[in-house]
Length: 443
Image (cartoon, rainbow, N blue to C red; front, side, top):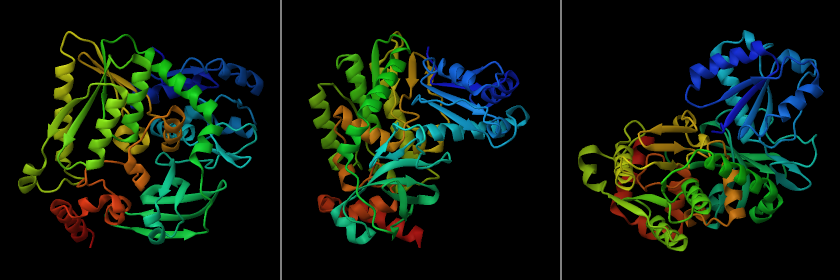
């Protein structure tokens, strides 16, 4: 089975140190660690590194700081490979936790490789001297196309349109214009957001940006599909489908690779879901010609006893997981061999970033093909492949869940309060109670 990640070092002693860190922190990830024989020639290192690029979906070269100071590091034009210089002089002398930190920063660099060249944002520039928008990204960074709908323009202080944004820590979003930071806004977890501060940035044409990146996107999609196929042979392919952008993309990729007869999406129909989401799921499933296994979940009867879900007690998630697992047992009994393709990506949460790319549980194999992707990559890949995304995203939503979800940020709450398309929801008594509780807890 082809690993998702391979880590390379220059010398064998550094490889041994990385192997110890991988064994401790990435035990079930299937990461292979190699050395390039201790060569002290950049040309030889480049040749050796390039020979590994087809052996894993992503390749990370960890370079010693002392080697980088002497320019003894490889160069690469491979879009699935990153050369990352660690913060200490030598890898072999670092603590295992420090090595883990550098691996995570290297993975962030893979995800954040976006450049501005010749008037366009590119994942793979034509010039080897091009510098990424964020040269030293942190593990919590994400790059995305940020939507400002017309009804929010005066509130946020930005013209209607799509913008390239860096999602930073604490809800801070840095807005870019022609490859440079123009200003920022802060989106709060509770209610509201801080109005945009900075210069008016230039909007981005997502269709044109997708066209510019078409070759790279198709290459990565093909490589990702090949990685999925290399997982083995399965009777059925299950896709837990929420209606969000990640699971919708995975569903359509699965249908493309395995055919609609072998793919079974599982949708949990929750009584506090957005009505638009349920319509979207029905329409897309009919267009794809797939039979959706629907599990009905009633949360409203639990609210008088449990109260609204919170970050500390997401009792709703436990019920949803139970419903999904029940569907798995029904579709994939004990004598069947099934693949579960999950659309989770690392940047969505810390818990998701800690999951291995592939693992088995009984007769089910779980795989996370989009684990390494940024939000912008997913958005542009959806355009390139013609994947229809939920219309709630056009209203400015970043994520889609229930309308009483504790992860509903201040931005999405303001959209609900201001969007003409969501008039009926604003009159829902339950949403009014939810809003009152959020107001009370944030004051």
